[in-house]
Length: 94
Length: 327
Ligand SMILES: [Fe+2]
Ligand SMILES: [Fe+2]
Ligand SMILES: [Fe+2]
Image 1 (cartoon, chains in turn yellow, brown):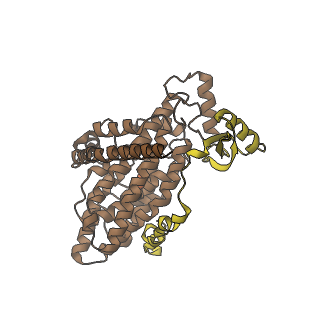
Image 2 (cartoon, chains in turn green, blue):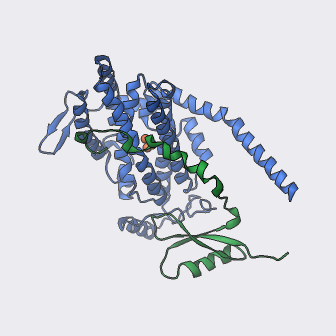
Image 3 (cartoon, chains in turn green, purple):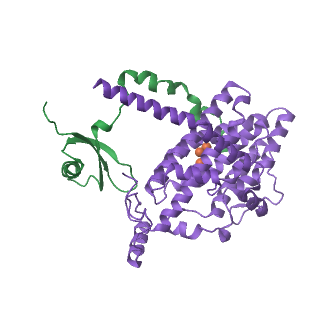
Protein backbone atom coordinates (compact mmCIF):
# COMPACT_ATOMS: atom_id res chain seq x y z
CA UNK A 1 0.00 0.00 0.00
CA UNK A 2 1.24 3.46 -0.87
CA UNK A 3 1.42 5.80 2.07
CA UNK A 4 -0.52 8.87 0.94
CA UNK A 5 -0.25 12.32 2.45
CA UNK A 6 -3.62 13.22 3.99
CA UNK A 7 -5.94 15.72 2.35
CA UNK A 8 -7.11 18.86 4.20
CA UNK A 9 -9.96 21.25 3.50
CA UNK A 10 -9.02 24.91 3.86
CA UNK A 11 -11.27 27.69 5.19
CA UNK A 12 -10.32 31.39 5.19
CA UNK A 13 -11.86 34.31 7.03
CA UNK A 14 -11.52 37.37 4.79
CA UNK A 15 -11.76 39.69 7.79
CA UNK A 16 -13.16 39.74 11.31
CA UNK A 17 -16.94 39.73 11.35
CA UNK A 18 -17.22 37.32 8.43
CA UNK A 19 -17.44 33.54 8.67
CA UNK A 20 -14.64 31.27 7.49
CA UNK A 21 -15.36 30.19 3.94
CA UNK A 22 -14.22 27.08 2.12
CA UNK A 23 -11.56 27.99 -0.43
CA UNK A 24 -10.06 24.65 -1.49
CA UNK A 25 -7.90 21.82 -0.25
CA UNK A 26 -4.30 20.63 -0.06
CA UNK A 27 -2.14 17.69 0.99
CA UNK A 28 -0.01 17.84 4.13
CA UNK A 29 1.47 15.35 6.57
CA UNK A 30 -0.10 16.89 9.68
CA UNK A 31 -2.18 19.86 10.86
CA UNK A 32 0.82 22.08 11.54
CA UNK A 33 2.14 21.66 8.00
CA UNK A 34 -1.36 21.91 6.60
CA UNK A 35 -1.81 25.32 8.27
CA UNK A 36 1.55 26.52 6.96
CA UNK A 37 0.82 25.31 3.45
CA UNK A 38 -2.68 26.83 3.50
CA UNK A 39 -1.24 30.14 4.58
CA UNK A 40 1.34 29.94 1.76
CA UNK A 41 -1.06 28.84 -0.95
CA UNK A 42 -4.29 30.58 -0.16
CA UNK A 43 -3.40 33.90 1.53
CA UNK A 44 -0.69 35.39 -0.68
CA UNK A 45 -2.78 38.41 -1.67
CA UNK A 46 -4.48 39.46 1.52
CA UNK A 47 -7.31 36.97 1.17
CA UNK A 48 -7.78 36.74 4.89
CA UNK A 49 -6.62 37.00 8.47
CA UNK A 50 -7.52 33.55 9.78
CA UNK A 51 -7.20 30.00 8.46
CA UNK A 52 -8.88 26.73 9.46
CA UNK A 53 -7.77 23.35 8.18
CA UNK A 54 -9.97 20.29 8.59
CA UNK A 55 -9.05 16.73 7.59
CA UNK A 56 -11.06 15.99 4.44
CA UNK A 57 -11.81 12.57 5.86
CA UNK A 58 -13.64 14.27 8.72
CA UNK A 59 -16.15 15.85 6.37
CA UNK A 60 -19.40 13.93 5.96
CA UNK A 61 -21.25 15.09 2.87
CA UNK A 62 -24.85 14.54 1.82
CA UNK A 63 -25.45 12.11 -1.04
CA UNK A 64 -26.05 13.94 -4.36
CA UNK A 65 -28.45 11.14 -5.38
CA UNK A 66 -30.64 12.12 -2.43
CA UNK A 67 -30.58 15.83 -3.19
CA UNK A 68 -34.17 15.66 -4.40
CA UNK A 69 -35.68 14.13 -1.30
CA UNK A 70 -33.41 16.22 0.93
CA UNK A 71 -33.96 19.64 -0.53
CA UNK A 72 -37.00 19.71 -2.76
CA UNK A 73 -39.77 19.54 -0.10
CA UNK A 74 -38.78 22.99 1.16
CA UNK A 75 -39.98 24.46 -2.12
CA UNK A 76 -43.58 23.60 -1.22
CA UNK A 77 -43.42 25.13 2.22
CA UNK A 78 -44.13 28.62 1.00
CA UNK A 79 -45.68 29.54 4.33
CA UNK A 80 -42.13 29.81 5.72
CA UNK A 81 -41.67 33.01 3.73
CA UNK A 82 -42.86 36.47 4.82
CA UNK A 83 -44.46 37.16 1.45
CA UNK A 84 -46.98 34.36 2.04
CA UNK A 85 -48.85 36.63 4.46
CA UNK A 86 -50.89 39.50 3.21
CA UNK A 87 -50.26 42.68 5.11
CA UNK A 88 -51.98 45.76 3.74
CA UNK A 89 -49.72 48.47 2.32
CA UNK A 90 -50.93 51.04 4.89
CA UNK A 91 -49.62 48.99 7.79
CA UNK A 92 -46.09 49.56 6.54
CA UNK A 93 -42.99 47.44 6.72
CA UNK A 94 -43.13 44.29 8.76
CA UNK B 1 -10.59 22.58 19.64
CA UNK B 2 -11.90 25.81 18.18
CA UNK B 3 -13.65 26.84 21.35
CA UNK B 4 -11.11 25.42 23.74
CA UNK B 5 -7.77 26.78 24.83
CA UNK B 6 -9.03 30.27 24.14
CA UNK B 7 -7.16 33.17 25.60
CA UNK B 8 -9.04 34.19 28.72
CA UNK B 9 -11.33 31.16 28.69
CA UNK B 10 -9.70 30.15 31.96
CA UNK B 11 -10.40 33.61 33.36
CA UNK B 12 -6.72 34.50 33.41
CA UNK B 13 -6.50 37.21 30.76
CA UNK B 14 -3.77 39.61 31.77
CA UNK B 15 -5.85 42.76 31.82
CA UNK B 16 -3.24 45.48 31.87
CA UNK B 17 -4.43 49.05 31.17
CA UNK B 18 -2.63 48.80 27.80
CA UNK B 19 -4.53 45.64 26.89
CA UNK B 20 -7.91 47.13 27.84
CA UNK B 21 -7.11 50.32 25.98
CA UNK B 22 -6.10 48.44 22.83
CA UNK B 23 -9.24 46.31 23.05
CA UNK B 24 -11.45 49.37 23.34
CA UNK B 25 -9.68 50.89 20.34
CA UNK B 26 -10.55 47.85 18.26
CA UNK B 27 -14.18 48.17 19.34
CA UNK B 28 -14.25 51.89 18.60
CA UNK B 29 -12.81 51.21 15.14
CA UNK B 30 -15.77 48.83 14.51
CA UNK B 31 -13.40 45.86 14.33
CA UNK B 32 -15.20 42.61 15.12
CA UNK B 33 -14.00 40.38 17.93
CA UNK B 34 -13.69 36.69 17.03
CA UNK B 35 -13.50 33.71 19.41
CA UNK B 36 -9.73 33.28 19.28
CA UNK B 37 -9.04 36.96 19.94
CA UNK B 38 -7.91 38.11 23.34
CA UNK B 39 -10.79 39.77 25.19
CA UNK B 40 -11.43 41.09 28.69
CA UNK B 41 -13.00 38.55 31.00
CA UNK B 42 -15.94 40.91 31.57
CA UNK B 43 -16.65 41.07 27.84
CA UNK B 44 -16.66 37.27 27.65
CA UNK B 45 -18.84 36.95 30.73
CA UNK B 46 -21.34 39.54 29.52
CA UNK B 47 -21.67 37.78 26.18
CA UNK B 48 -22.02 34.32 27.70
CA UNK B 49 -24.79 35.64 29.94
CA UNK B 50 -26.58 37.59 27.21
CA UNK B 51 -26.31 34.99 24.44
CA UNK B 52 -27.25 32.23 26.87
CA UNK B 53 -30.30 34.16 28.03
CA UNK B 54 -31.26 34.84 24.45
CA UNK B 55 -30.91 31.16 23.53
CA UNK B 56 -33.01 30.09 26.53
CA UNK B 57 -35.68 32.60 25.49
CA UNK B 58 -35.94 31.06 22.03
CA UNK B 59 -36.33 27.59 23.52
CA UNK B 60 -38.74 28.47 26.34
CA UNK B 61 -40.60 30.66 23.84
CA UNK B 62 -41.63 27.52 21.98
CA UNK B 63 -43.85 26.51 24.91
CA UNK B 64 -46.61 29.15 24.92
CA UNK B 65 -47.08 28.77 21.17
CA UNK B 66 -46.65 25.02 21.11
CA UNK B 67 -49.66 25.01 23.42
CA UNK B 68 -51.88 25.94 20.43
CA UNK B 69 -50.47 23.84 17.57
CA UNK B 70 -53.04 21.07 17.84
CA UNK B 71 -55.85 23.61 18.22
CA UNK B 72 -54.99 25.92 15.32
CA UNK B 73 -58.25 26.78 13.51
CA UNK B 74 -57.16 25.69 10.02
CA UNK B 75 -54.48 23.71 8.23
CA UNK B 76 -52.98 26.96 6.95
CA UNK B 77 -52.66 28.32 10.47
CA UNK B 78 -51.35 25.03 11.80
CA UNK B 79 -48.63 24.75 9.14
CA UNK B 80 -47.55 28.33 9.77
CA UNK B 81 -47.46 27.95 13.56
CA UNK B 82 -45.60 24.68 13.35
CA UNK B 83 -43.04 26.28 11.02
CA UNK B 84 -42.65 29.25 13.36
CA UNK B 85 -42.10 27.13 16.45
CA UNK B 86 -39.61 25.04 14.47
CA UNK B 87 -37.75 28.25 13.57
CA UNK B 88 -37.56 29.24 17.24
CA UNK B 89 -35.91 25.92 18.04
CA UNK B 90 -33.38 26.70 15.31
CA UNK B 91 -32.77 30.15 16.76
CA UNK B 92 -31.96 28.54 20.09
CA UNK B 93 -29.42 26.32 18.36
CA UNK B 94 -27.68 29.19 16.50
CA UNK B 95 -27.40 31.08 19.76
CA UNK B 96 -26.17 28.20 21.91
CA UNK B 97 -23.53 27.57 19.25
CA UNK B 98 -22.44 31.22 19.33
CA UNK B 99 -22.13 31.01 23.13
CA UNK B 100 -20.13 27.79 22.87
CA UNK B 101 -17.41 29.63 20.90
CA UNK B 102 -16.77 31.53 24.14
CA UNK B 103 -15.82 28.37 25.99
CA UNK B 104 -19.07 27.59 27.83
CA UNK B 105 -20.63 24.16 27.28
CA UNK B 106 -24.18 23.46 26.19
CA UNK B 107 -24.65 21.18 29.19
CA UNK B 108 -23.66 23.96 31.56
CA UNK B 109 -26.09 26.40 29.95
CA UNK B 110 -28.91 23.84 30.07
CA UNK B 111 -28.13 23.11 33.70
CA UNK B 112 -28.25 26.83 34.55
CA UNK B 113 -31.63 27.23 32.86
CA UNK B 114 -33.05 24.27 34.77
CA UNK B 115 -31.67 25.41 38.12
CA UNK B 116 -33.05 28.92 37.65
CA UNK B 117 -29.56 30.48 37.69
CA UNK B 118 -29.93 31.65 34.08
CA UNK B 119 -32.88 33.80 33.06
CA UNK B 120 -34.96 33.96 29.92
CA UNK B 121 -37.30 36.65 28.65
CA UNK B 122 -40.11 37.22 31.15
CA UNK B 123 -42.69 37.51 28.39
CA UNK B 124 -42.82 33.72 28.20
CA UNK B 125 -44.04 33.51 31.77
CA UNK B 126 -47.46 34.73 30.67
CA UNK B 127 -50.08 32.16 29.59
CA UNK B 128 -51.58 31.83 26.09
CA UNK B 129 -55.28 31.76 26.93
CA UNK B 130 -56.89 32.15 23.51
CA UNK B 131 -56.12 31.66 19.84
CA UNK B 132 -55.81 35.43 19.52
CA UNK B 133 -52.74 35.21 21.78
CA UNK B 134 -50.92 33.37 18.99
CA UNK B 135 -51.58 36.32 16.72
CA UNK B 136 -50.57 38.85 19.37
CA UNK B 137 -47.35 36.99 20.14
CA UNK B 138 -46.27 37.03 16.50
CA UNK B 139 -47.22 40.66 16.09
CA UNK B 140 -45.96 42.12 19.39
CA UNK B 141 -43.52 39.65 20.91
CA UNK B 142 -41.71 38.80 17.68
CA UNK B 143 -42.08 42.47 16.74
CA UNK B 144 -40.28 43.52 19.93
CA UNK B 145 -37.69 40.80 19.39
CA UNK B 146 -37.00 42.16 15.91
CA UNK B 147 -36.43 45.66 17.34
CA UNK B 148 -33.91 44.17 19.74
CA UNK B 149 -32.26 41.87 17.26
CA UNK B 150 -31.71 44.12 14.26
CA UNK B 151 -29.02 46.19 16.03
CA UNK B 152 -27.50 42.95 17.36
CA UNK B 153 -26.65 42.04 13.76
CA UNK B 154 -23.91 44.67 14.19
CA UNK B 155 -22.80 43.45 17.62
CA UNK B 156 -19.02 43.58 18.13
CA UNK B 157 -18.77 39.82 18.72
CA UNK B 158 -18.64 38.10 15.31
CA UNK B 159 -20.41 34.79 16.02
CA UNK B 160 -23.32 36.54 17.80
CA UNK B 161 -23.70 39.06 14.99
CA UNK B 162 -23.69 36.31 12.37
CA UNK B 163 -26.26 34.25 14.30
CA UNK B 164 -28.48 37.35 14.53
CA UNK B 165 -28.34 37.91 10.78
CA UNK B 166 -29.75 34.41 10.25
CA UNK B 167 -32.37 34.92 12.94
CA UNK B 168 -33.53 38.29 11.65
CA UNK B 169 -34.03 36.86 8.16
CA UNK B 170 -36.47 34.36 9.65
CA UNK B 171 -38.32 36.70 12.02
CA UNK B 172 -40.23 38.69 9.44
CA UNK B 173 -42.45 35.71 8.64
CA UNK B 174 -43.19 35.30 12.36
CA UNK B 175 -44.41 38.82 12.78
CA UNK B 176 -46.47 38.82 9.59
CA UNK B 177 -48.24 35.55 10.30
CA UNK B 178 -49.14 36.93 13.74
CA UNK B 179 -50.45 40.18 12.36
CA UNK B 180 -52.48 38.28 9.78
CA UNK B 181 -54.12 36.25 12.55
CA UNK B 182 -55.02 39.36 14.54
CA UNK B 183 -56.20 41.18 11.44
CA UNK B 184 -58.50 38.31 10.58
CA UNK B 185 -59.99 38.37 14.07
CA UNK B 186 -60.22 42.16 14.20
CA UNK B 187 -62.17 42.13 10.94
CA UNK B 188 -64.35 39.21 12.05
CA UNK B 189 -67.42 38.83 14.26
CA UNK B 190 -67.91 40.87 17.41
CA UNK B 191 -66.79 37.94 19.51
CA UNK B 192 -63.61 37.60 17.43
CA UNK B 193 -62.90 41.31 17.68
CA UNK B 194 -63.34 41.11 21.41
CA UNK B 195 -60.96 38.18 21.56
CA UNK B 196 -58.34 40.22 19.68
CA UNK B 197 -58.81 43.25 21.98
CA UNK B 198 -58.65 41.13 25.12
CA UNK B 199 -55.42 39.60 23.90
CA UNK B 200 -53.87 43.00 23.14
CA UNK B 201 -54.96 44.17 26.61
CA UNK B 202 -53.08 41.33 28.26
CA UNK B 203 -49.90 41.41 26.13
CA UNK B 204 -49.25 45.11 25.55
CA UNK B 205 -47.55 45.90 28.85
CA UNK B 206 -45.55 42.68 29.09
CA UNK B 207 -44.34 43.34 25.50
CA UNK B 208 -43.06 46.78 26.58
CA UNK B 209 -41.29 45.14 29.51
CA UNK B 210 -39.35 42.97 27.06
CA UNK B 211 -36.97 45.89 26.51
CA UNK B 212 -35.90 45.73 30.13
CA UNK B 213 -35.68 48.34 32.90
CA UNK B 214 -35.35 52.07 32.25
CA UNK B 215 -31.87 53.12 31.16
CA UNK B 216 -31.08 54.55 34.60
CA UNK B 217 -31.93 51.26 36.33
CA UNK B 218 -30.29 48.89 33.88
CA UNK B 219 -27.36 47.11 35.47
CA UNK B 220 -25.24 46.18 32.46
CA UNK B 221 -26.27 48.82 29.97
CA UNK B 222 -23.39 51.33 29.97
CA UNK B 223 -20.56 48.86 29.61
CA UNK B 224 -22.47 46.90 26.95
CA UNK B 225 -22.95 50.07 24.94
CA UNK B 226 -19.26 50.90 25.28
CA UNK B 227 -18.30 47.42 24.07
CA UNK B 228 -20.85 47.72 21.25
CA UNK B 229 -22.62 44.60 22.35
CA UNK B 230 -25.66 46.87 22.51
CA UNK B 231 -26.21 49.72 20.06
CA UNK B 232 -29.33 51.32 21.54
CA UNK B 233 -30.51 51.69 25.11
CA UNK B 234 -33.59 49.88 26.46
CA UNK B 235 -35.68 53.04 26.41
CA UNK B 236 -34.64 53.95 22.86
CA UNK B 237 -35.69 50.54 21.57
CA UNK B 238 -38.94 50.61 23.54
CA UNK B 239 -39.78 54.01 22.01
CA UNK B 240 -39.07 52.74 18.48
CA UNK B 241 -41.31 49.76 19.14
CA UNK B 242 -44.20 51.88 20.41
CA UNK B 243 -43.93 54.29 17.50
CA UNK B 244 -44.01 51.43 15.00
CA UNK B 245 -46.80 49.49 16.72
CA UNK B 246 -49.42 52.10 17.59
CA UNK B 247 -50.37 52.79 13.93
CA UNK B 248 -50.58 49.03 13.34
CA UNK B 249 -53.12 48.75 16.16
CA UNK B 250 -55.04 51.75 14.83
CA UNK B 251 -55.31 50.12 11.44
CA UNK B 252 -56.92 47.11 13.11
CA UNK B 253 -59.35 49.28 15.05
CA UNK B 254 -57.91 47.95 18.30
CA UNK B 255 -57.23 50.11 21.32
CA UNK B 256 -53.84 50.16 23.04
CA UNK B 257 -54.60 49.71 26.76
CA UNK B 258 -52.78 52.86 27.86
CA UNK B 259 -54.94 55.92 28.61
CA UNK B 260 -51.84 58.11 28.71
CA UNK B 261 -50.67 57.16 25.22
CA UNK B 262 -50.45 60.34 23.19
CA UNK B 263 -48.63 61.54 20.07
CA UNK B 264 -45.96 64.06 20.96
CA UNK B 265 -45.34 66.27 17.96
CA UNK B 266 -42.21 67.82 19.42
CA UNK B 267 -40.32 64.57 19.94
CA UNK B 268 -41.91 62.93 16.92
CA UNK B 269 -42.98 59.93 18.97
CA UNK B 270 -45.59 58.73 21.43
CA UNK B 271 -45.64 59.49 25.12
CA UNK B 272 -46.85 56.58 27.18
CA UNK B 273 -47.91 55.67 30.69
CA UNK B 274 -45.54 54.19 33.26
CA UNK B 275 -44.81 50.48 33.18
CA UNK B 276 -45.66 48.49 36.30
CA UNK B 277 -42.13 47.67 37.34
CA UNK B 278 -43.30 45.76 40.41
CA UNK B 279 -44.97 43.29 38.10
CA UNK B 280 -41.83 43.12 35.96
CA UNK B 281 -39.50 42.34 38.87
CA UNK B 282 -41.97 39.95 40.41
CA UNK B 283 -42.11 37.91 37.19
CA UNK B 284 -38.30 38.05 36.79
CA UNK B 285 -37.99 36.71 40.35
CA UNK B 286 -40.13 33.71 39.50
CA UNK B 287 -43.64 34.74 40.50
CA UNK B 288 -45.23 34.99 37.06
CA UNK B 289 -48.17 32.75 36.28
CA UNK B 290 -46.15 30.34 34.17
CA UNK B 291 -42.57 30.44 35.59
CA UNK B 292 -42.86 27.12 37.37
CA UNK B 293 -44.64 25.43 34.47
CA UNK B 294 -42.05 26.54 31.95
CA UNK B 295 -39.08 25.20 33.89
CA UNK B 296 -40.98 22.04 34.73
CA UNK B 297 -41.67 21.52 31.01
CA UNK B 298 -38.01 22.12 30.08
CA UNK B 299 -36.79 19.72 32.77
CA UNK B 300 -39.30 17.11 31.68
CA UNK B 301 -38.20 17.48 28.05
CA UNK B 302 -34.59 16.96 29.11
CA UNK B 303 -35.31 14.01 31.40
CA UNK B 304 -37.77 12.31 29.06
CA UNK B 305 -35.34 12.76 26.19
CA UNK B 306 -32.49 11.02 28.03
CA UNK B 307 -33.32 7.62 26.55
CA UNK B 308 -33.17 9.07 23.03
CA UNK B 309 -29.67 10.47 23.62
CA UNK B 310 -28.58 7.17 25.15
CA UNK B 311 -30.08 5.14 22.31
CA UNK B 312 -28.37 7.35 19.71
CA UNK B 313 -25.00 6.88 21.41
CA UNK B 314 -25.53 3.12 21.63
CA UNK B 315 -26.56 2.98 17.98
CA UNK B 316 -23.50 4.95 16.89
CA UNK B 317 -21.32 2.62 18.93
CA UNK B 318 -22.89 -0.43 17.27
CA UNK B 319 -22.40 1.04 13.81
CA UNK B 320 -18.77 1.83 14.58
CA UNK B 321 -18.14 -1.73 15.78
CA UNK B 322 -19.82 -3.17 12.67
CA UNK B 323 -17.72 -0.97 10.41
CA UNK B 324 -14.51 -1.98 12.17
CA UNK B 325 -15.41 -5.66 11.91
CA UNK B 326 -15.96 -5.28 8.17
CA UNK B 327 -12.59 -3.59 7.58
FE1 LIG C 1 -36.72 33.59 17.44
FE1 LIG D 1 -35.39 35.96 19.24
FE1 LIG E 1 -39.67 34.54 16.18
